[in-house]
Image (cartoon, rainbow, N blue to C red; front, side, top):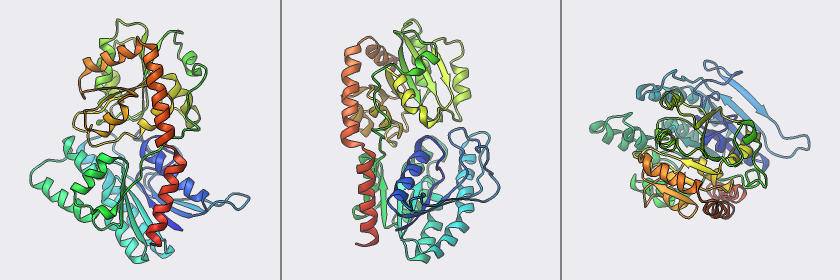
Length: 415
């Protein structure tokens, strides 16, 4: 098949949506499909355009089949992007709109390639009108994959106001989503939300995020990063790794570290980049039980995840029922227990139960108590970690998820 993929986040970004979209296109190429990618320069999670890329000019990268002739071709069209120096609601809107507008001429030009499918990921839904037009011009099928409910999130986080604006934006969102032949998402709760928004049941498909259960696995030895960080042998590491933005609720982690200062064997490691990192470092000023790490290269990911004795998965209360965090899959694959902030009835709560401990969002005292409980009980950590690994192997395997996705693509193109 010929497949056009449009995403505001794409490799070489190492986290979140960019990671999964990049791995998806690489897998499709390996199956012999021809892929055209429309994306901006990499900028996430540092919110700075990566060296070697331009935020102002269009670019083109091409990857042909390998020397044996195996695999399909891939062409990546890089589109200009406004990347705000400081995050705010209005700047975030301009950021997403800049990609929607800069990608429009590329999407329309790709209609002449006669693709079989135009596939786009939300965020950002602002691209949808141009993706729809490209699909109609080429008579391609149109697929929307929802990684984040960006409209709901914008209101929940106060980036947009409620009232008339909310009704108008939700009506526009419903209109756009119903124009797609397929709409997929990553969790059961988000699937239910799509149906509430008026997406027809026959449109919806499951396309969960996956874990690399071969590349991410429990080590039989201590992680080499423990020595690198100068940790004592009996230190129990509580690790957060990922984006440091608004919806993560990382203030809860910093406050939990403050509450556990007297427990010398508990050590916090916060790894990643993002708009909130500087503020969080200021908030943690004076705490000796936190170490900060930059985002680690992909080849170090398994060592990093095995650094943890306990994985931390905080979320803000107003975002906790809207998002299935992509980072959870590799946490489980590493065979370590998770302390999450999630309420009963949410999918995060269901997945973490029996594989870690759930606490209410925003409750630093209970979050700290859960960390301390696991830190003081090695047997419980081992049992929860083994259950987490089993879940990843049985439900989150990359090959099985992408094979089903390919079958869904073929069914869409040739019912």
